[in-house]
Amino acid sequence: MSVTEEFFYYGKEEPSAEETGGRLPTALVFPGRKGAGLSTLGWQAVYRLLAPDAELAVERFFLGDPGKPSVSMDSDKVLSEFPLIGFSINFEEEYLHPVRMLKDSGVPPLAAERPDFPLVMAGGPVAFLNPAPIAPFFDLFWVGEAEAGLKELCIELKRHIYNGGSKKEFLELIKDRDGVYIPGMTKGQVRRAVLAPGTVAAGHGVPLLSAPAYSCFISAEAVFKDMFLVEVNRGCPYGCRFCAAGFIYRPPRHASIDQLKEIVEFADPPKVGLIGTALTDWPDLITYIEWLKKRKTKFSLSSVRADGLTEELLDILRASGVRTVTLALEGASKRLRDAASKNLEETDFLRAVELCAAKGVNHLRVYVIVGWPGEVDEDYEELAQMLQKMDEARSRGQGKKKKQFMRITLGASCLVPKPWTPLQWSSMPSEEELKNVLSKVKGLTKKYKGVAFSGDSPFQARLQGILSRGDESLAEFITIAAEQGGWKKAFKFYNGDPEKFIDNELDQKTPLPWDFIDTGVNKSYLWRERNRFHEGIKTPPCPAEGCSECKKCGMFQWLNDR
Image (cartoon, rainbow, N blue to C red; front, side, top):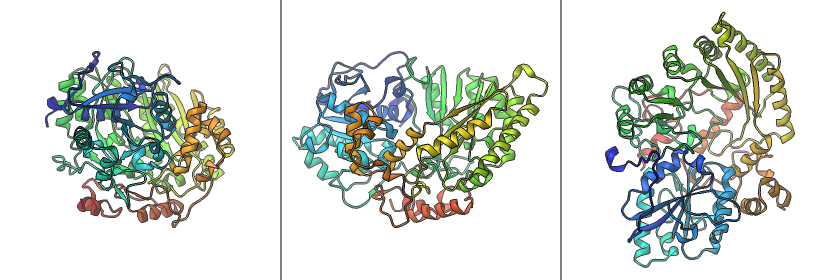
C-alpha cells in the first residue's frame, strides 16, 4: 500500500467526526494528556491504521479532569457511547487512568461487571510485557504489534455486532488466536503478533521494517512541538540486559530510506523527529539527514550511541542547529557495563565527549543507572574517575574556546528489572538504599564546573517495578489509586503487600505472571543471560544479517514456525 493511500496528516487542521453510517463507533484512548498523546508515535500509528477504514468510525480520547466523563476530541460523545473502547498503554504508571476514565464515564471498570458491550481492550508495550496487573479491567488484550492484525480483528468485531452477535460469543470465537489474550478464557500461551521482517534492505543485509510508524498529527500543543515523527528502526541488536526493548521487539528491523523519504515528501512537515532504539546503527542515517537538510527540513534524533557518534554526524547535527546531545553510559563502572552487556568501550565514550566539546555542543546529557544487582562502592569510585576523565575530555575538546563552554548534566535513573529481560528474576534495592546511592552520585558532580545532576525518584522506580512484575491481585491496589487520587494513597490504604513483587530474588523455577506470553525469546536464553550478567560476561549484539546467522535466543525458529 502506498503512503498516499493510508496517510493522515492534518498539520494545524483537525479531523472532524463523521456520521457513523454503518461503521463501528470506536474510541481510541490515550490515557494521558493531549500533549503527550500528540507526541506518542504508537498511539498515532494505531489511529492511522484504523481511522481510514470504511467499517470503523474512530474518535480520539485523552485524559481529562477527575470526576468528569471522558469526551471525544472529535465530537461531543462520551466514552460510554462507544461499543469498542481501545486503550493504548505505554507505561505502568498510567494504569490508574483507564480505571478512572471508565468509572467517570459510567462504564464499570471491572470486566466481570460488563457482560455486554462495550468491549474494552488494551494494547501497547505493557500488553506483551505483563498485562496481569490490569487483566481484571479489560475484556481483551492485543499482544504484539498493531500492524500484525489489529485492524482485521476490529473489522471482524464490527461485522459480528452488526450481525447481532454478543460480546461473549465474540470473545469465545477469538480467545485462542495469536496476538489475543482474553483473561479467564484464553488457555495456554499467547503468541505475540509480530509484523514479520520484510526482504533485506538493499546492500545492507539488514532485516526490513516493512511498515514503519509515522505521525498523523503535528501540533503546537504536543510535547514535541510541531514535530512529525518517523520510525527509523524497531528493536535493538545490542540486547542490553536491563532493556526490555532489546528483547520484546526482536528481531531488530530497519526502515527503508526510500519509504521514509516518500513519507516526508508527502507530509512536507516543518520538523522531523527520527525515532528508534539504535539510530546510529541505521546504515542510511547520514544519507537521510543530509537529504532532510538539503530540503530545508529541521530534524532531531531520539538517541545516539557514543560509539556511533562520528565527526561527520556531529557536523551535520550542529549545522542543523542541534545544541544538546544525549549519551548513555548506563553502568557506573566497566564491570557493570560488561555485566549489562552494554558493549561500549570507555575510550569510545570519552572520544564522543571530546568531540561534542570540540564541535560546540552547548549541553551534553549523560545517563547512568543505579541499583544494579551486586553493585559495590568500588563501582562508584570508578564513576568518580570517569567524571574526571569526562571533564578532561571536555577541556581537550574545547581547547581555548572558553565562550563555547559545554554544560554537562549527569542523569541517574534507578534500575527496574523488567519482564522479558535477563534481570526479571532480580530484586530491587529499598527506597532508602536507592536514595543513598543517588546522593552519592550527586556528590561526585559537585567538584566540577558546569556539571549538574538530575536524579530519578526511588519511589516511582519501585512503583514501576511493582506494577510491571505483579499479578492480578494488584487490581485492587490500582483501583484504590484511581479512586483515592494517586499511588501514595494506594500504598496507604491497600491491605496487601505490593512490594513482595520486587523485594525477593527469584529462582529459575519460580512461576512468573507473564509466563503465558510467547514473545519468541526462550526463557532458558534469558536465564543464561542472567547468569552471564552475574559472571560479567558480555554477549555480542545480534548479527546484522538477522536471526539466520545466530539462532541462539529462539527467535529464528519462532519466526519459521509461523
